[in-house]
Image (cartoon, rainbow, N blue to C red; front, side, top):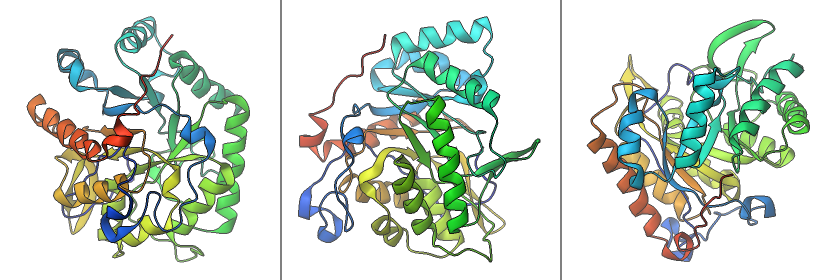
Length: 327
């Protein structure tokens, strides 16, 4: 449910628990980048999950057949709100085989009229059922009053919106005290009243809300292509020490716009962005997320392998991996 319209020449990234190859990292920066202060203790204490895959029902059989290649699964949280008996049984089966990370689409953290205790409790009940080490949602608006927009819409990069998003996050944390990480979205619309850069906006929200970052490198690459900015400069300007998880996948070009369609293999440019981040951040998990034109599983296996190889470039970090115990 990405906002329609952003992606670049072919890109996607997958990164994870890659700590640092010190001054050897691209550009010679140490872990965390130019602005690193080291991750907060709660992020340091999170388990390293490894390389995972977005759970899709069409992939269920292949996922269990290739269980040894997959360290964790990410679930679309919204699909399990008010779960049927069959969905509860499905969650139980999946949780016995894999660590599960709930990924929200429709909480609408960018909505001014966010106060909806019933909706928050619905989201919280699913997260609590899965008992994950963290869960994620987007920095976006998906609802305007009672209207469901139907996609992830961008919000203005303003100080006022930083305060609105942080206020909404505080309300979420009161009901759901499980670590929350926030995803950057792809977008085509650029608000003329923006006061901050995208990097400044995301950084302010992460710092003031004390959340982690789910860095979607495909979204970053798409935005950099569609809005003509340097993705490396963006990475150097955000708090990479707050990166917990990374999303990777490829998109498609449509009418001169790179769309984050989750429909193609990860491009070389995105893998390189992944390596750049992996050498500077103590990432806990990399996710490959296919949604459209899902290929034979051998293709997915290849992407999982590339992501794992990038992690192995930082063996001192990967060797610290801790298995997450599910109850």
